[in-house]
Amino acid sequence: MTTNDCLFCKIIAGEIPSTKVYEDETTYAFKDINPKAKVHVLIVPRTHYANVAELAKADPAELAHIVEVAQSIADKEFHGDYRLIFNTGLDAGQTVFHVHAHVLTGEQLDE
Ligand code: 5GP
Ligand code: ZN
Image 1 (cartoon, protein in one colour):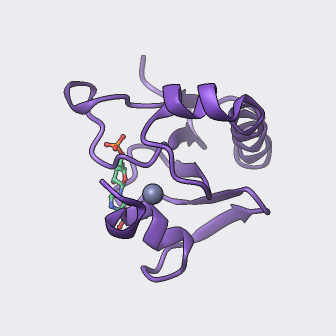
Image 2 (cartoon, rainbow, N blue to C red; image 1 turned 180 degrees about the vertical axis):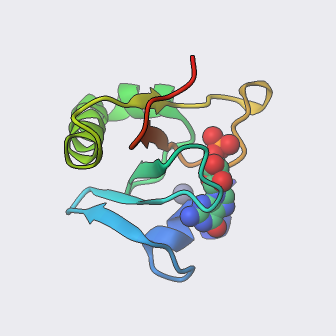
Image 3 (cartoon, rainbow, N blue to C red; image 1 turned 135 degrees about the vertical axis):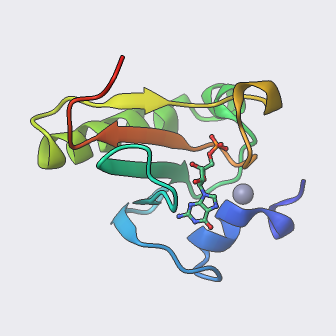
């Protein structure tokens, strides 16, 4: 997949609407369209990488930054506790091949 037909590249570019939660120079966070918790936010790097392993290899500082952003969302929404998920690969449930952190918070989560 090229960045041209990537759903999250289009969301980052504002070509497809989203509900922004946070943004800075390198990173964008928005509400998941199909929330699995009271607060379900997706955090993405503005640069396209297919998955978290590619991101970790190419730009580990950005991966660490995504964790910081997740923490700050959970600090604001739910006394700092959260679940952070990177589905990686089709058989793990990855459907959008632009790396994204799922942040689930805002309520006590099932195990
Ligand atoms: P994955 O299954 O790849 O780990 O996660 C993709 C996530 O993107 C899913 O949780 C899905 O609900 C969310 N999603 C898919 N399309 C859109 C969209 O157009 N807008 C938003 N905000 N979320 C989307
Ligand atoms: Zn992309």
